[in-house]
Amino acid sequence: MSEPYQPPEKDAGDAKSQEKKKGSGLLRIILFAILLVMVGLLGLDLYARNASKTAFEKVVKQVEQKTKAPPEEIHKLLGREPDQPIETKEHYFQETYSWQRGNLLKKEYIKVLYANEDDEPKLHEVVRNVEPEMNDIPNPEPAELDPADVDPVRDGIVDPGAADAEEPTADGDADEGAEPGDADEPSDESEPTDGEPDDSEEATDEGA
Image (cartoon, rainbow, N blue to C red; front, side, top):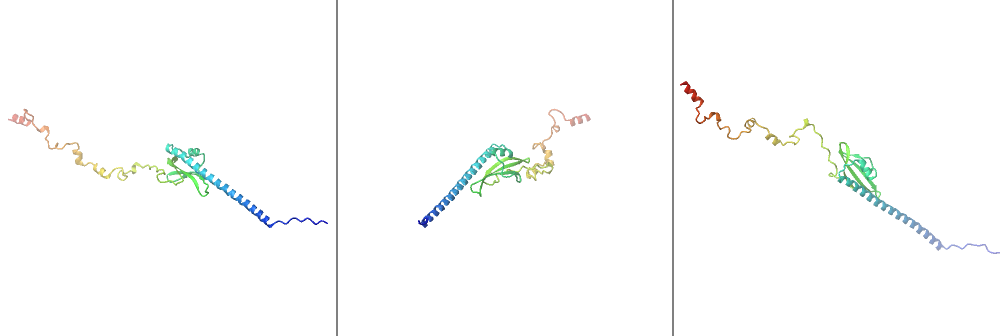
């Protein structure tokens, strides 16, 4: 009778080598996935920078041309809506546009500032990746004063010293326009004319 077939025993070294191959293959897959993620984040970062720069340059051109465009025109210009509805500040309006960077904790953004003109937002300034400074913020509209409440001296319209100097005195009104020395000169009526008798002398001769 022939002996039953017995499979050859596996060498322990061959098993270890196969396990190493499986482990190296898995490691390669993980490294390749990490590489793909890094490339994707880098592309997202480049896209955010280019998009924010392009949007900023478009709005800057409108600011330089002093178009005073309303928000609706800026939305059409940029081809998108802001991150949230327009914000109402003390005396101006503001919109924020942002783009996610590769670093998920950071964003590229621009802030568009609008002046408040009769309660209507009009384009004034734009900043990129910074908060607006005082010289970027529109100035508030001057408040309209009631003429009855205006005090020229109090409000600085007239200098107090100049106001006192302009007040005429009683003597000043009487002497205004008179030249120095006019008061001392006798009038022509009291001076006798040459060759003609005075009225008083004629009256004396008639009495005699």
